Image 1 (tube, rainbow over the protein chains, first blue to last red):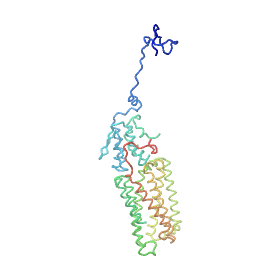
Image 2: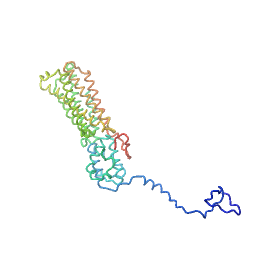
Image 3: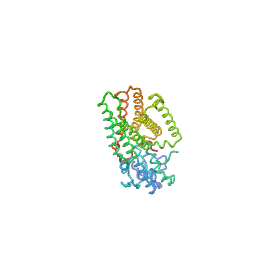
Image 4: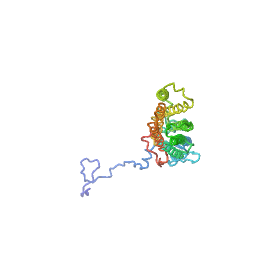
Length: 150
Length: 241
């Protein structure tokens, strides 16, 4: 912006005839509260679904799925398929499961792992195994992968 | 042929160890199918022995070999039933369409088997005048094959839209092996009934193909080649809801 020539007053912000390089009278500015942009982590958290609170029913669901699959493919293979899933701890001998992460994602990962063997047949086995505990959950809490097709 | 059957059987029994031997459904299935193959191989080895002892006799006069061969039927039957659990066939059986399909398959296979195994292969009801043990081993083996083939067809149809994943092809290969066995036994019965069978003819070729298919199937069911991944598998083609 060009320096103000001597004797010339600064121009109002609202002066439509003001030239591009004329000094502006900043005393006429009004405060505008521009909200700060949320942090990237906050934006990510808003986009992700709300993780479900810990629920013993999900532990039972995972345990029954792993046990039922072990009856078909064996304990060793069943354990191999789930022991690397984040948010899930499995007791090697009894195959008892404890969900420490997002239950929806954990159960989905479990079903996906077993479906690598026999496809949709394994998914149905998982649904049947979990049916007893799924029926005790509220409809909104039932993991998507365990919901029966309409 | 006997040596091939024994080799494939031993490899299959070893493969069942990867599934936990008899502690899992798949382990029991692979074990019983392989054990049946072993018994069949023993019968064939005995057949080959008699062939070298007296080459002019095409079929050994020993029912002991028939017992070894016949013992494969119930073992194959159990193996196929155990296999059906992994394929999801029972879920297909819960629908009215699946139940009707099974009934239709049973009717068709019963009529077709009676026609092929009694009328075509043995010249009709006159066959039932044969000695009892001849009838028992001839028809018993053929009926056993027909029952197993019927179950295999039913399993395939019921699990049509269920079976997938890594072991879809090996299971279908195994089921196809039992269909080949059915036709191989029919052809042998037909040729033997007309005294035109000779060692190394078309029936033996079908048997050899059948043994090879069984060997391929049970060894493709080896789970040790499935890599364990730390991230979930891709669900794009596996029917996950």
